[in-house]
Length: 111
Image 1 (cartoon, rainbow, N blue to C red):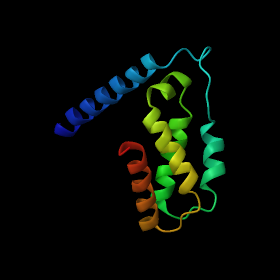
Image 2: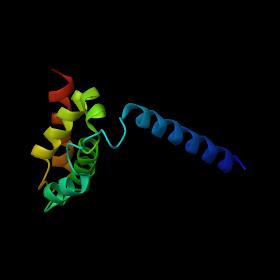
Image 3: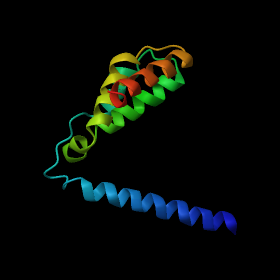
Image 4: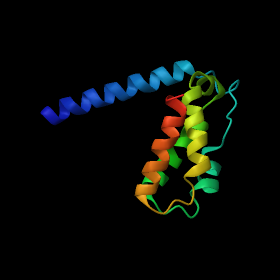
């Protein structure tokens, strides 16, 4: 039973988060995607062996594929995503990927 209650809380939290995103994003007819997520992954994941780098690349592509309204609200996240896509593709080790991602975060948030 406790697992069921926890699941209900998780589902409610996810539903509220999704609703918040839907309210921030204009209707699909008006909104324009800036990046196609699948193409972004294809272009940047290629020979990347590090799972840490792949994780950050997927997140960056996902963020950049959001609609323009959300994109403008999160300029720091946009800059972080652009840094990740510039420096992490092709990374082979998790240690290097972690350091590169940390450096991107510092460039964005420690200005």
